[in-house]
Image 1 (cartoon, rainbow, N blue to C red):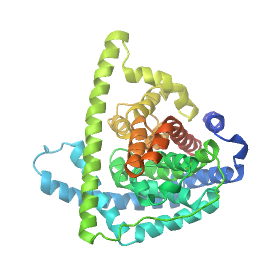
Image 2 (image 1 turned 90 degrees about the vertical axis):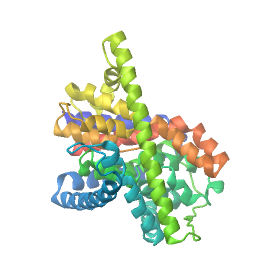
Image 3 (image 1 turned 30 degrees about the vertical axis):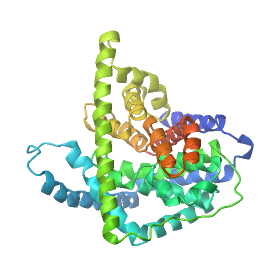
Image 4 (image 1 turned 60 degrees about the horizontal axis):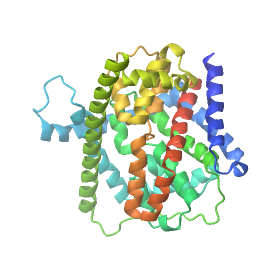
Length: 391
């Protein structure tokens, strides 16, 4: 039964994308079909085969080692602050971002990361039927983050059309930053994080191809690199950037969790239901079409809605707390859904980052903010549905 519901959900997501498309006549269906097949194939390998288990185990081992190394630095600075046997979220989940950000900076400085991103971007452009820059942007967003990625193409920004900017923003909001992946793995199972990264990459291209099709006349690919920085200048910059991200996420979590607690209290006094419970009922049908059983759909819908109105960290933290009576399959679907930047605050993050580089282009992104968010949310649902069909 869940297979039939999943297929119906898949059709609903694609139809919704078609309905909000800016140019339905020019949608190219062949690349979309190819990418859907790739999503199922890669998802099956990662979730259902020994090869996939080995790959995921290896990657999880790498991040686990990085988190242990990061822990050495955290213990040196904050040792003794946390009580024994406690799990301080800021120290154990957010502070490792500083170290992983430094690793990313080093890989970029020695030209390994740009070479990888450029190579994969060129290869993806042969599959997705999109431009080299859009393809590069998809993989770069998953490594650098939704705001940092635009810094790497700042020379190209003045020449980019409104359509290209919109597609690139959809890709950026659909993915997550590699510097934060380790923190996600501290909250949910690594295999779901890695599966989501792969599915969202292709999902972003699929939805962007449907929602925002266009023909390219000029397909240049230029990756901006800062050649004036010394190694230690770069390292200091990336370490401070990582700390800034960690503190920003912490501040947002403090604010959002406190607000949700207050709103839940007010709603419970007035209606007898918390705000999250009400959102759960609203989102239950959406959770149901991903293949989640109806008896779990209200609770699952509550977490999905929490992610949309706050951010993925808040929802992951709620999921990690336990106390949910979810099956393994529902946990897999939910976990994959939560791994993306598709939430309301991301509209401000992307448009703000763009404005810092180019005022005009930033205004264009802000103009299409809700459409970009809706498209990125469709990507999350698409990845969740495919996970439900495979699991």
